[in-house]
Image 1 (cartoon, helix red, strand yellow):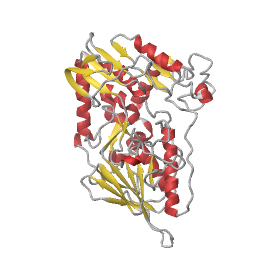
Image 2: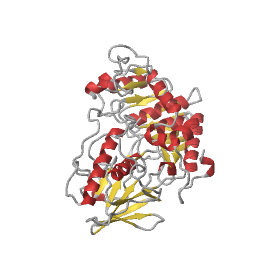
Image 3: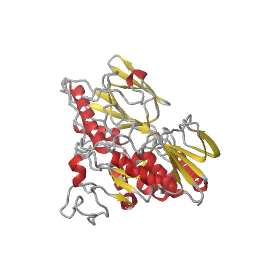
Amino acid sequence: MCGWTSQVSARVQTPKEMEVSSHYATPKASATSAHKFHSTVIIGAGMSGRETAKHLLATRAETTITFIEANKFYEADVTAPFALANKEYYHSNLSSPQHNLQIEGCTYVNGIVTAIERTGDSFVVIVGGHDDIVADCVVVATSFAHPLTKPAVGVTWSERLEELDSFRKAIAEADNVLVAGGGIVGCEVAGNVRDMLLKQSAKVIHVASGKQLLTDQFSSRERKMLTDYAKNLDRLELVLEDRVDGQSEAKVEKNASYQLKSGKTVIADVFIPSFASFRTSFLPEEAVNHKGEVKVDKKNLMSVAMPNMFAVGCNDNGEMCAIPKINNQAVTVAKNIANIVKGTGETFVHKEGMPVIQAELVALYGKGYGQINNDESKWLGQLCFACGFPFPCCLAPCVPMCGLCGFNCSRSKGGNVPAFFEALFKKGPWGPVLEKAKAKPAEDVPPGWEVEREMER
């Protein structure tokens, strides 16, 4: 459920409101402007990149905006484990052609960035199969990689569907499925995969390195609740304080042998690792930390190694990956780029979005169990949850359930929680990005952004 926390972004002017006339247009420099016309490259056209572009357009800064995006389709990150288990909703609710998401006033390039070089006051962005792109400012908005639950860089939409289908079939036929990772996504994947098993004798082997499931962002009470639930499940073997050695990619192979750090050997037909790694291999070593996060000045989110390069959603400022956090990072970066373009010499100081939330509010473990995690959220988590405001009928801290959504928002746990989110995902296009894409599909497909005809439905 990574990043689901808020579906509402801050209100900004749309490109249409700013009178940008053409889908391919870029802002025009004023004849009286004292500043040169700048260029900004945003690497990654997912939510982080889109939010940054929208906020930058709203500043009216005299800069072109060029997106570089590796995939011609978009897949809602937060619904990835749900997509694996629910093929029938993938097209309608969970994915879209990338061209339906493109923002007026921006240029789009489909390709994979292989390197960024600094030459004088400018950057040279090297893109496979394309001419080099020169920019004054660069925004790295590449998010993170997650085997199977997120599409690989550069794959086609049909290749992505084939990957998901092959794993669905293998899981249904498997005797054992090995899931590695005890974080929020690993737990959701393990629970969903268990629900997908068809053989009565089949089981999931869930391996986690901690003494309990979830990370130390969560309270010991929350970690214990989820761990105790998993321990008591049938068709699931929970292995704690251990890890899978030497294998980082999802894999389908009948009776494959996997070595654990403890020396134990596990035999499984399917292996699904649930570890995130940041997609920043194109950056020089000094620009990233050991996790691949871009090292930034926490005040303005600018790279400490490469001035005028910023990072949204993949930096080392310590914030969790959630929509309100990303939105505020996008605002910070957009305003600081605008200051560079306008030559003000000012710094817009970053403020964390919804600082009261420091851990994912929902943890799911298959269709049978979910829990609300608000021990670290103080008063906000105790008062309200998914509804966004304590409506008069919502007495979550005081009653078992308010009837609005079927579960107590304060400290709920059990089957009502995953049922609520399953209904939410099935209702229609999920999240702010896909809702807009499905509401108004692009009339014309920009050259180079065509997807396979059978995928366009």
